[in-house]
Amino acid sequence: MASRLLLRTAFRAATSCRVARAPALSRCMAAGGIPTDEEQATGLEKIIMKAMKEGADPYNMMKPKNYAGSKADPHLVPSITNKRIVGCVCEEDNTAVIWFWLHEGEAQRCPSCGSHYKLVPHELPH
Ligand SMILES: [Zn+2]
Image (cartoon, rainbow, N blue to C red; front, top):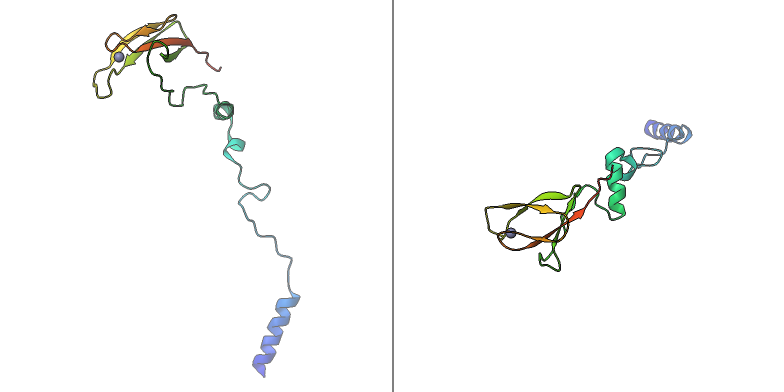
């Protein structure tokens, strides 16, 4: 008898004392969830993310495109000046790098293997 009374009292207490519960937070930030990388990025990181969305690579962070190295399809070397030092690993297993100056204008050949390189003007984004 006492247990029934105790159970009934506990049930009434549980049903009548319901306090408006705060909704459970599904994500950490209650307002809009966790901000994405693009929402958090500022400064240089934001500029890079925006450029990469547009398909540009302003800081040459991506792997360079492969070129045949022939006269018709020379390796394109970006430069902010009218010349640049280029290192050519002529064959895949070579341990020595052939360094030479590449000047603006016509495509030049590597003095060792003959691959063609062409200087292309590049402007820094800032
Ligand atoms: Zn070479």
